[in-house]
Amino acid sequence: MSTYARIKRTVTTRQAAERYGLSVNRSGMTCCPFHEDRHPSMKLNEDYFFCFGCSASGDVIDFTARLFGISLKDAAEKLAADFSINPRPPEQSKIPNCHAEPSHDGARLCTCVLREYLRHLRIWQLRHRPEKPGDPIHPRFAEAMQELPTVNHLLDCLLGNDLLLARQTAEVLCREGHLRRLSEYLGTLSEKERDCA
Image 1 (spheres, rainbow, N blue to C red):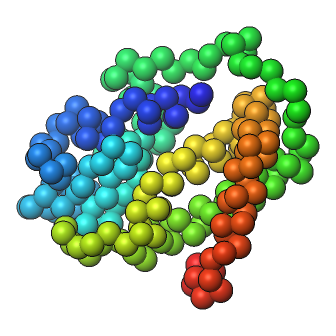
Image 2: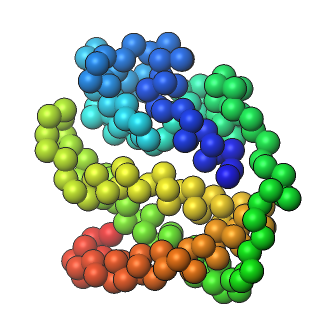
């Protein structure tokens, strides 16, 4: 598991916000640090944050990077240090050996399909975001907020410098049918939805 993934599984956006000085109410709302905010307009969930005032959103690493004006890499290192998360990946010998490695084309196909899904998720995140607290949550917005961290993590695994991790990620996506199901799902989107995206 990558450092980014370990951080996201260990630290919630609320925990990071409170660690870095923000006051969060019982509903998980806080005054947004990214714009002039007199009343809490930022929602802090387990996996992501979203501001109803300025539309800032992302995961705990995005939040920390933006809060301190640093890169995602530096934000991950800061979170790892502040929350005592070991930044070193597990030893190569502890990673199970894969019998069937996907071809280079298979890994490329995984990346292509995930990027297409990511494009839809980002559009749904912006297009269907609630205008104010209390508004009903559109299913496409909920899907985007739920799936964005996973899709970003998978793309990090596929496109990072760890070639073994990239091969294993592609192998699991192909072997267990995740890629096929995602491709079929993208194919079911209405033409209007694909055109708007």
